[in-house]
Image 1 (tube, one colour):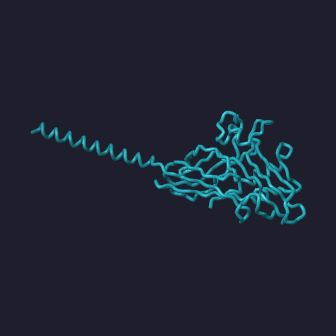
Image 2 (cartoon, helix red, strand yellow):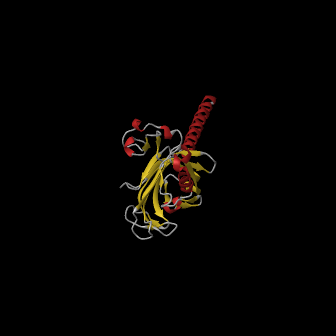
Image 3 (spheres, one colour):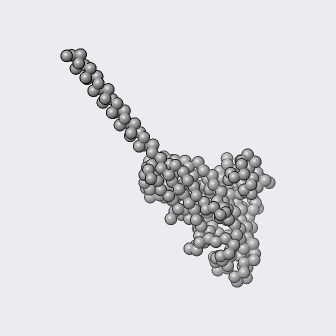
Length: 253
């Protein structure tokens, strides 16, 4: 009889232990559930949608201008949880509004609650020393993207080109061209997510860039006529103003 009781007790202990292991496994799996996240990006000029080549906009002096090129790097994407930990999205993106494909970043992230979205405008000092010949043509850092300054072995971080009417009419003819790209032009953006909770079904975020704010923002104004060109160290003042204004030009909608 004692042998039977001992055997029953042993079986019960094994079952309890097994159930416990299953419960703990279930809990651990829940802590590591992944969810899809999609981040897309649009652009406006003040309140009007950005349309390259055709649409006219007003600058800070009420002069008509149009945008012909808007192209830039976004990198070092991170999501910050409410406990202060970070989830890296490990992406480097080249955004080109001349492209037929709209920008979209897709990632699998941990479920949980997030308080900030972080990303860099341009490339950090390590990425900026990359050799474009090392990448396939489709890669954002490849030579095929026409974003590398061979004369300094650095990348162009941000490119804005267009034309303005110097006579105050509706016929933009004077070109402007701004390219940033030295290490000191790299900037980081942090946007609040207001304790966004991501469950297993995932979510999406919509970023918006205000082009008007880039040349006329909290950190200064760049004039399309008197300061219409910046491609080198000689025009670092213009580049710094644009880089600083870019930080405040992104928002989550």
